[in-house]
Picture 1 (cartoon, rainbow, N blue to C red):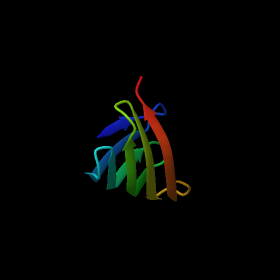
Picture 2: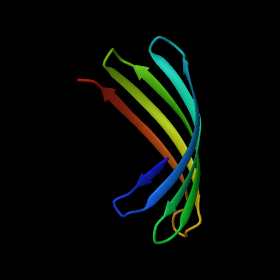
Picture 3: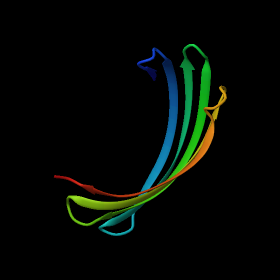
Picture 4: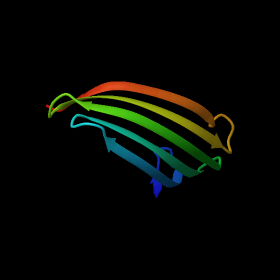
Length: 99
């Protein structure tokens, strides 16, 4: 897909994602997955980023409108432009509630 930013950058992006979800009870589920992304930015500086992300999560439903979750992500991003590559571990814990 192509995206244009407010700075006029054109981002030609290709993604591949695989994810699995497994119910372990009526109220709980696990999910895990993999995401590969290739971004070609065309602006003042040509830049190409590739990233690989793996993730795993746990979800628990308290009732029809409220659930708890915990998720761990690892991302490895490489870039042809210095300063845009990184490794990241992101841990998230939260609550979702519908009103």
